[in-house]
Length: 162
Image (cartoon, rainbow, N blue to C red; front, side):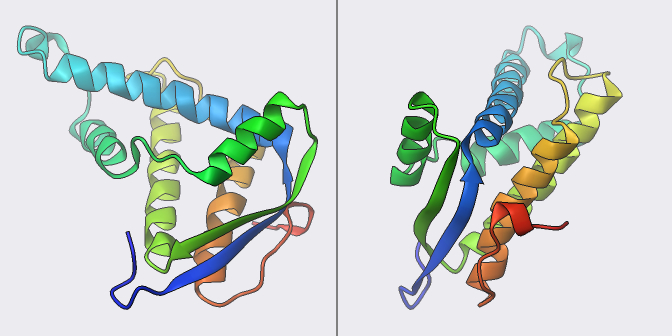
């Protein structure tokens, strides 16, 4: 995805805590796996009458799958390598992204917040909701895209207040 004029901007994630990223990623991965299973069941006509998932959760599953499934990048490779090396912190994880990534980041954060509510309710999902620290980290990560693409300076993880 590129801006209509092709404009790309730099985003820096400063002092990213690798172990917290790992924990947050594991929680998100578990949720997305469960969404994939639910989505597969919903498309199996023989199961449709037995699945009792709220319409908004179904829309959320479809939106997450459509908009964010399969997103992989050089930065994710660096994160996974840092995790495998048991690094504590990545000092500066640099991205070069289109301005439109800000809106997608906000949408993704809101979708994960909504999914967490379903997890907390315990009625339709087995996955546990993200912890408070994971939610704060998730929003720091996404806010860096939102804010920096709007021209604000980066905020290091230890300095982030939500």
